[in-house]
Image (cartoon, helix red, strand yellow):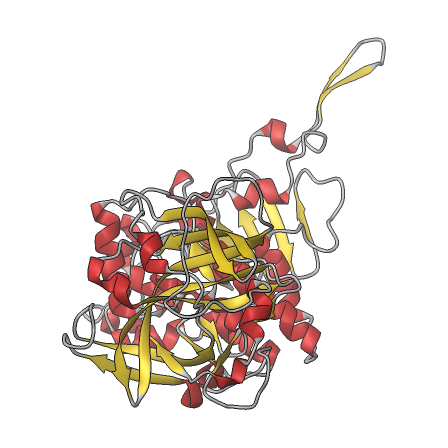
Length: 498
């Protein structure tokens, strides 16, 4: 069996450490255990289960090598457990106690001497279902518990009532019937997909979408250590790799699967104002662990664009002659490198970063520097209407830009470009805002600064908020963002993104 729970002060006092492992390997003292450990042992004994996994007692917490080794095995540990016990109330409950509200579990009725019965309340009629019980539970606000729930074959949740959840069904104490398949929560949908897959292209596209949904859900959750962002998903990464028949060691890097460039098109949501000093400190810490193109660098909840019927406009690697982009796999050794830039060539200072090699076409018909001069410094969000002239008229575009973080140096705007990642129906493109940092191995190097979208709108009587002209070159016929970007795709040289 395994245990999912929130750490408390008692847990920290009794965890396995270098200085007590000799004692714990002989016999673990239980007198100072938190109540949830005692309850978990009682449940395991009730089911005649000999072994119980508790992370604080099974991983040497101050041994980085043991921690890395064990944290990479979460898929094996939780998938092979016969049952996962989840204390979903966290610190609001003492151990695995079920704090039932009778009105949420049992029908309430009054009997009259005449024999009549009046039903006053039925919890099923009140819509108290699995989703309500679990999705807002304190336990599932913690990042590490997301993969524990997804990977476990069966979970018994202890909270306002007992909830059963497995890959086939889910039910609560007050349910009049069992839900087949399980109630549609983000974790149950992901759990089912990872256990029912095939190797077809359709399956790969669906799993690519599910990965983005999983990351978006995970990004809402809390982590004590920001550096745990990627390790806390490694078990799910391993399971995805098995489903895709793609070893993460060769096809996955820093939260990105190297077969779907649309994963680069993430954006942060939540706060429109700039971050607090605390958030700025967190952003600096995250930048030490993650490249700018990885969603893991964001301090807030992130989302991905919905890519229904969208074409990919960027490919991984530097292979010429591949035509339009698509779901093509490329290995880490052909796409990933380490780049070191000094102060002379990088506006952001000396640093060694994980770089991915890309090939795509930068937008040339928007003057992004002119747009940023009108930026409101107190927000990360910018939207405007602009005109792009072409022979015979002006194309009206709606431009949206969202910065990942404040631009530290106004001189950086000189090297800013828009890199389209996807396009839809010749009217809509989206991608990332990047800044030029220098050269490495003969390739230009860029760093991500934000996300953008451009929509083509027909000329109208609306007043143009901003007029953004073309660079100093003869204007070309402009037939729409997607069509313009697809033209001569393979003629453009590869570059690196750090």
